[in-house]
Image (cartoon, rainbow, N blue to C red):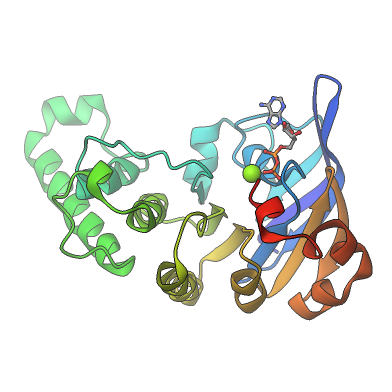
Length: 257
Ligand SMILES: Nc1ncnc2c1ncn2[C@@H]1O[C@H](COP(=O)(O)OP(=O)(O)O)[C@@H](O)[C@H]1O
Ligand SMILES: [Mg+2]
């Protein structure tokens, strides 16, 4: 088991964003987290990455309770994410955006950079090479020196994934990676997430694109008003009357509202 969510609740004032949610993710799985807008999906990511504390319940990563750790320690443990609203440095180049991600887990501190300039330079070079490799991996080869804000929307989403992968996650959380993508970009994204899985990285995916979710995920949990209403294989989820009622039966534009 890579990640165990155990009876997790989160309240914002009087609002119960999540209530007693439990599920577990096996190593190497692509696990889908779906449900209508406001269901609590992003909140779950914010709890797993310790942006907010849980109100109750535990989050266990590889056997260790992590829900009281600082966010940077969560990254060090091997959990990285992308954001529903793209968070790149728009004025920096593509490769620089990835390099920032590598830096967050690299060993050189302030002292090292003062006393060991040569090893620092070598490390910089290593980080650049690694970042270029990651850009190639996500399909952004040739765009290294393009300023991030000049990339297409789909490219920016893939750049976010490259940056999240820069710190070598074991668990990657993707928050609506296909949002705003056209069909071709979504197909490329499907292949990319498959390649991520083939690297042995476990993926937790929030996504509204149902063909993508159903074709990609090994298992899926469904949230509705902060409560888990179903969990199972894509087939089980698609056939579940409560899920159809709460979510799958809706029109596309309602889902994206
Ligand atoms: N920081 C916050 N402060 C107050 N309420 C929040 C906060 N974050 C999320 N919420 C509320 O929690 C509920 C779940 O939101 P969210 O997790 O973003 O849903 P989803 O990602 O499934 O669309 C919503 O009602 C939202 O308004
Ligand atoms: Mg969300």
